Image (cartoon, rainbow over all chains, first blue to last red; front, side, top):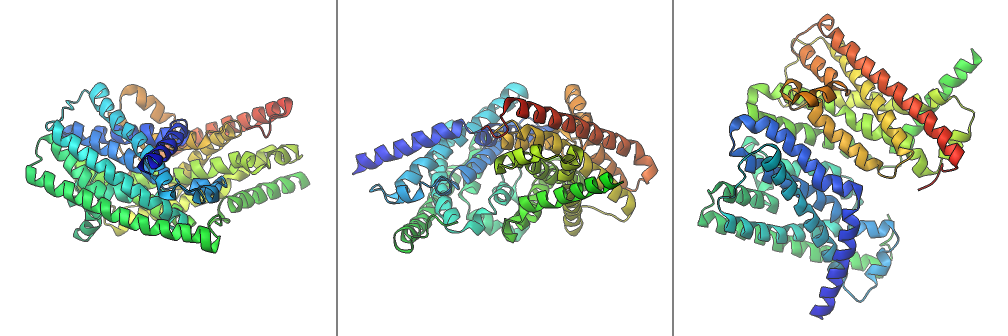
Length: 261
Length: 266
């Protein structure tokens, strides 16, 4: 069973990844948009000192990661509806979430290019010292963060399918997450009442821990708290995703309204 | 005279119908998301970034720059799709097959989006006023209105040029997004043009919005219309150049598409 699902995940991953890397919009969202953000941020923050180089590289990379996830994973099922293949996929013996997991993994992996591109820009073009002070901790946080990003994507895909009203806000959902997660400036700039919204977003904890690890200020306590929060939120996202997938399949098999817009 | 009236009717009908075709099939929430939440998010993000980088005393610099840049969402995305969308909708061959005046058809596609962009900028500035990031006490409203209108026109003219590319390429969303975000960098909305490398400054001055944003900052700061008239004249000239280039390209693509029989090729 596990092997069968793994094969299905890999097939969905491969198919989705190959189509994403050739898609002009995703090339833009993954590589060019974070570079433009990074150029603006490097231009604005250069007077703050060279230490901000790595801060900007991580922040703009995470911004690209979020945008790619929002559109890649958010449209993972909806795109099947547009092409008329949603009912076929829902009727397969392989669970729908397995296929969406493979597709979400593909968009998350592609979005990691954002971080690499921003990092290279800061290092090669601006000549900032972009050393990571705590590489082991950085790698741990990044790995945990990716798991949580995938869980977030699994939640977005059925949510967008079930409620087109939410998907209509897809474009408008980019900047609020950049702001609330403190990708390029600290959330301390925001009013106090926005803090709970930051806390329920796993990218906030990921950005916080990555920036601390890069700057060499990540203590063991913070590492524990941040990773625990990232994983806890990931589990919550997965729980919500499981519920949403059940509703999706109910609509497919009982109501027969899945393909309707 | 009769021909002029027909062309004006064509201009008006094209303007209204292309706008309705782009938006009326959407639910009101989509329209609200595009017109209110997306601009607000962008303005807040870059203004907060600017405040963090340079201090709260410079909030109005970033607020005005980004509020003005918001006009590109109508001017670039809206206008491009209004022209390039004809191909996607399968109506291009009817458009090119009609005897209608091409200039009226072409420029009509941008008209409502200019008004739309104007309202978007006003809303962006209103958000800034509500958040206390900008002070209009010394602003000449007429000068500001004229500045916004000219900047919106020149951006929409660039959108017409890009829309022509939409007639021959499948990657128009890539081009749209790229230009939109490059304007954030090159127009001086966030990084002062004078602090950009020299080669980037040449690009900045060849783009719409650069002079408009500078003029808007001056007017909000209390400058009378006479002090910004040169900037506005330059912005208008840039718009006319893009409009002429776009129209010329439109005619070339029409002739080529007809000659090759590739009007609907994908």
